[in-house]
Image (cartoon, rainbow, N blue to C red; front, top):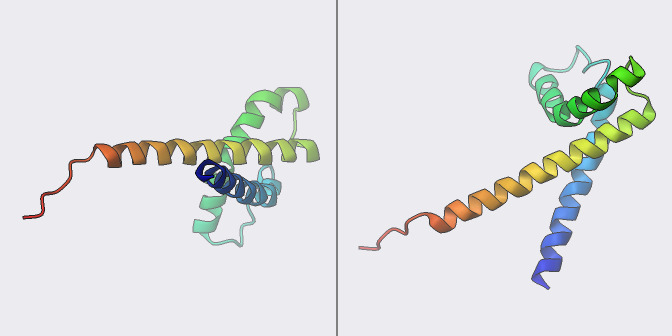
Length: 107
């Protein structure tokens, strides 16, 4: 039962990342609007980097221009999967470090 809950939690996180990636993917090629505050522009560009770099590496030479609607869907899927994987690996590393940390004495 616990494993089912954990898988469902990671699935929900992936769906949220997918929705955010899909909403922001349209800003990949033309860029983030100039009227956005600098921190929002920076966060959006950093968030889209994994999926966008993957799309560039695989398809830029084939299309020679910005992504089509299918390319934006690809960017959103890959971007959300990479961020989910990064979150999962980070959580595993931190939990391993937490278990390995010495316990404090209660004197």
